[in-house]
Length: 249
Image 1 (cartoon, one colour):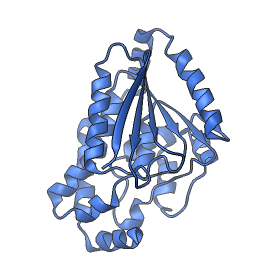
Image 2 (tube, helix red, strand yellow; image 1 turned 30 degrees about the horizontal axis):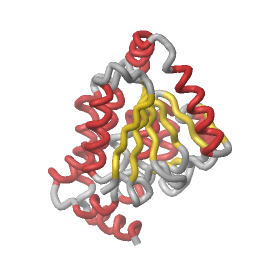
Image 3 (cartoon, helix red, strand yellow; image 1 turned 120 degrees about the horizontal axis):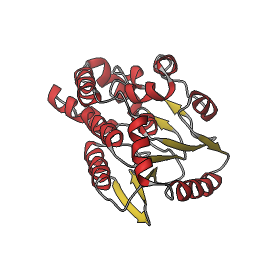
Image 4 (cartoon, one colour; image 1 turned 135 degrees about the horizontal axis):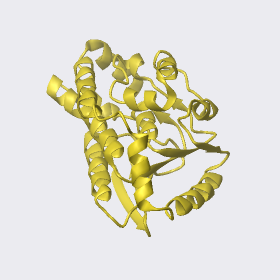
């Protein structure tokens, strides 16, 4: 089922997620991540959160294909995709700045998580892809977060070419990644340096900056769940069921 681990060092909290299937997310893991973000939001001793995944392979493969295949009705589908809505809204509302450590490839919901970070570090292997259209659905829930970072046209370029990987250089130029490094080791050195310095700043100023960064997104409280309902309906189609089976094989 995967794991979520929280490590607090001083005023910096690290949220580490893991799943054996390329760090993908079943609904239970999405809920655990949401809960941990909400808990850290209330922790006055924490001013910075680092979001990272385990291993040296993929950063996040998005939604669990096995769980998508098991969806049998509209309510289940809508509830599953609401899991990503919950996480993104938790990240958006969190009063702490969230720094992403995107060490490897990100697909679908993984791109959404990277987009919901306030600042992100990546490597040259951190390619990204929105493959949802190819399986009969679409990146509806994560689209607001992705478009906010890279713009509607770049988001549509990814969405409408669902089998193509975009390089970390492309993601950096579009604004998804803040800094890109050749190796994970170089990334981690810079990440430690950066977060240590950032966490030394006035926490009230950091809080107010977080509010500024997310201005104009309060309607996401309803928008993301409306989008989840669209995905929940489409995942029941024969097209999507057949496509998921092919992808799984």
